[in-house]
Image 1: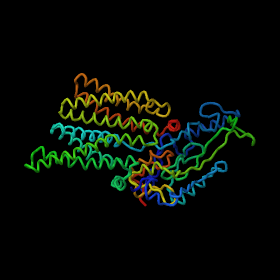
Image 2: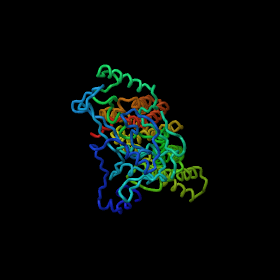
Image 3: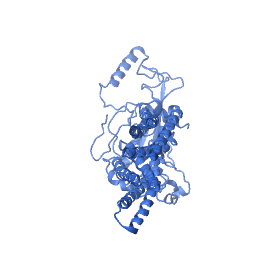
Image 4: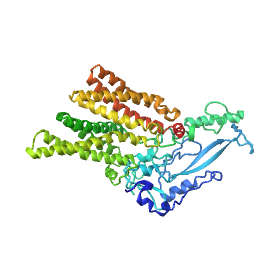
Length: 165
Length: 352
């Protein structure tokens, strides 16, 4: 049958899927400094529109979550240091009360992708390099992929104002 | 507050629920509070009190990632619960029609097929198309057939149901009014029977697949009750069909029995739902206000309808059942929205 996720014939014939090549995107949060350059580069490269110029009030993260206009998102996680009460006011260099962990987050392109299985129009497909792709011009905005993704990677819903390109 | 730029070249930004978004001004309340904290910190060296998460950063900590939803809550609006109600009623009234054909109740079969046609073949597709983000592309639903996608199966079930009920109703009306004489009339009778049985089969699927549809998602309150949902939707559909036909004047014992049966099952489901708790994971049902919609709906079409029917107040029982079926559908969608925006439920649901 057409478009049945990883079970379908048009998926099996891709060499990546056939040979079980596992492709991943490795980010090392211990080295990341939270500069968000990857977020900016993703927007520039893919010509993704802005998220609206708003402040979320959450740490330095004003993007919040993945979505239609956010294909890469840097999470700012605040963690206690081992002893960690916060000491406000003047601080010396060696007492750092809490630390940040940064996590650059993207769509996982799951092997058994919930959105791909759920899509009733066949708009979400697996490409020849094994990634999951939403074909914008085929999608009719039913919103079922939104609730089928366990990582909230899908846009809210492709809406009437979304340009077809 | 939505500060997205609204022109046709941009995405309509909807803020996820629970996210506090405010414009950058110096006089916003949080900025003022931050200034106070800075002053206090400068004077005393230590800050205590409300507004400060003493253990961690300067921002009050919420579960998960600043209280952000972990999965996206459903985006469906009022059309979907009404479609669940209409589809369930239409599907099950085709089942009643096929029963009526077997027992030669032609009038009941005609009424039931009219209900199936109007609710299932006209109103349901219209409601579904209205809810799409891009209604003009609704035919894309029929370009693939995926047995692993409940929505794809639903689109095909609804289409096949429509394709069975409309010719079934036409053939039945032609046969019942004796438009054609002799063998042609006999042929019409066979054709009507064929299509009505077809619509009964697809009607059963139409009434129950909606429960599977919302059960097969990442929303905790839904997938934790994936067994209950199809049973509830199917029974509510059966009861609604019987109730509507009774209100249309078909007061026969069989429909009364169906009403008793549906109300009894709904009562059992109400008990099951209140016993089958999953703690934090499905707290939207048991603790949040939208859970009351489900409970009120289930009481209306369960115990209340049963009692009214027991005392012979059939029209009131029918109205109560119809109302209950509608309200509980709205409740399930509302609960999904609450549960999907609640990060703690999603984390907790991973245990099940």
